[in-house]
Image (cartoon, rainbow, N blue to C red; front, side, top):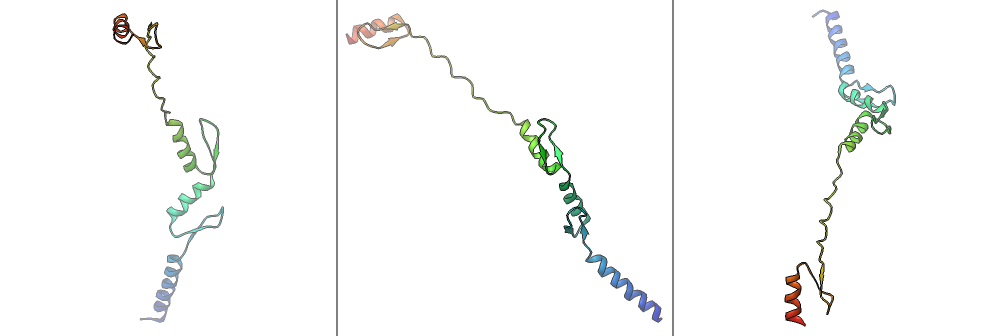
Length: 112
């Protein structure tokens, strides 16, 4: 093998190792990533985002997206209590009340 060919292979190997160990650098903060995808995901964290519903500002679009979901949550409101039935018949001898005259008559006959 000619000497120039060995040199080329050795040089290529050095370049390969340099590239293999190269990190992708965030120009905003200097943080490094092994993959370009990791860098892109991280870079989005530097862009601010504003909630279009309430105007609150977040440090990243992802944080804003999580916040936006809170606007979609429907608050649970339990149904109102049913109205207390009117009990118009009160015993003249005690504090008992009844919903029908017949119940009152039975009460008076059995208790008083």
